[in-house]
Image 1 (cartoon, rainbow, N blue to C red):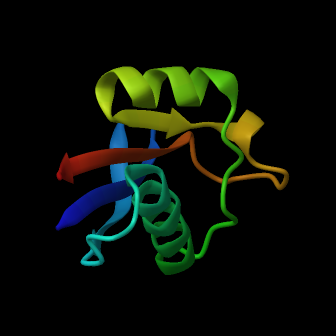
Image 2: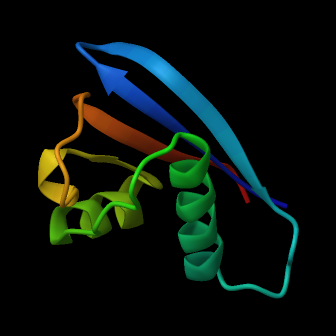
Length: 88
């Protein structure tokens, strides 16, 4: 099972969070991540952020990243959307 958490952060505090669980073992890790991000964004009522080069590099190294205002086309009323793989 693939699990990824997502949380909205403002001034170092978590405002809302959730966990996405992906049961389909036939999907690639990339597909799991994309599906989980879509689910997290939907649950937290956010547009799906854009993966910038810095997000990709950080996620590949640490299995986590923060999406800030530059990853969203719309204004966001928080500092970052933090995502992190819990387990694979």
